[in-house]
Length: 195
Length: 292
Image (cartoon, rainbow over all chains, first blue to last red; front, side, top):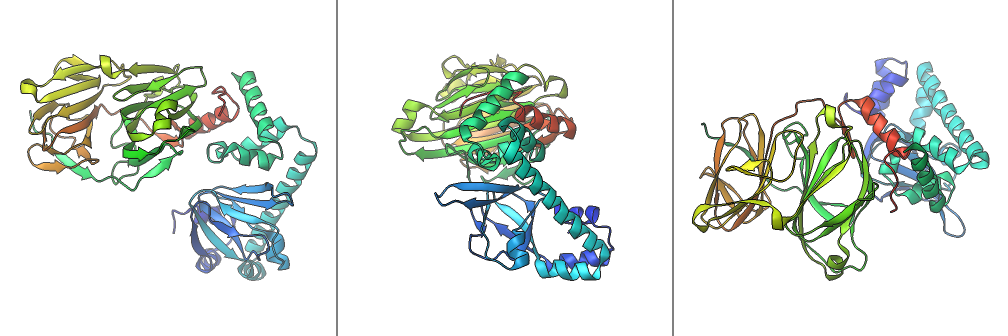
């Protein structure tokens, strides 16, 4: 288990003792999803936080007109979950789908709660994870409200350096909340400036 | 001169699609013991074994993608490929032709079945190799070499036994047209049934064969059928190929560059820092722009 991204992630992010990590590891399962396979559909309850060991996930909603809106990508070392569905036990508004053959660790919410009660280091870790998530979402809202297409794109490539090589541009445009044409314009303009 | 023996005969792995136009078996770096170091300077080899593509009005292929730090060598055995790049270059690789693209500091390109060929459909068979560049040349200016079959250097075997096309390097004094950054021999041995051809490469060169058509026996003992890859040992220099039926064999032998490799996706550099730089340059448009 030592050469896994997940264990490296845990040991470098949780200042807790080995026993708690062992307990955590022994309670989460590994699941593989084939490219295109869904981990969650709208209306279902999300039961897990998924840690991406290898591969790539996307989380998206579909509006009344049938248009998809990508809210998050999760490449290696990212978590993906619908916190609302998991925590408040509500049907999800989102779909989660594997964009590549993907290996995930499934973390059960009850496990999070139990470990948070019994281990302060873990509680601190989970807190940090949550606040990081909130920070990320706030940033997204501000961007979608006020940033130019170019600013959104530049932020995107900082956050996800290799995604342009892994997903179609139409997905990137969907995430950025701009049309594929305007993404193409931004990239062309950057190429002109940076050449 | 000692005999260079066979280290292993590798069966083709389950094929996968690159884009929708190339159905390939990857040998390097995914086959057992064929990581990027083993066949250095050849760090990737995808083989589209003979496969029938149905007629298609919309040409199938791979959309815009970048490369940096190495060369791509496309050898067309059947079918035709059209390519375009961000520097305004483009062309058609026809049956028997070879395209040698030095991506070096970086190009964006796309590769599709040639328009008219795609409309008719047909059998398609190609090899794509990635040839690594030494650190000092990784950021050199991109360039193309087109080696057309009609003008390719050839060595004719005695008694009408067939011929050896020399793409790069040398065979029996005949030199190939492609210039390479490090010593590399790339040959197509086209042998008639029963014919034998002898090869001689330095022991330290990484050497392998890919059976494109027919079947062969190496050194009179090791059999390799169609679509199989033969890895030769790094000991001895001489070996022979005998065609057990009419055969076409791609023969590769190169001097290892022996430098660190940091690779991710379409970039092959020496350090992780250079890799991150490659992603950043690509994202920021420093490879230019090419319409999908």
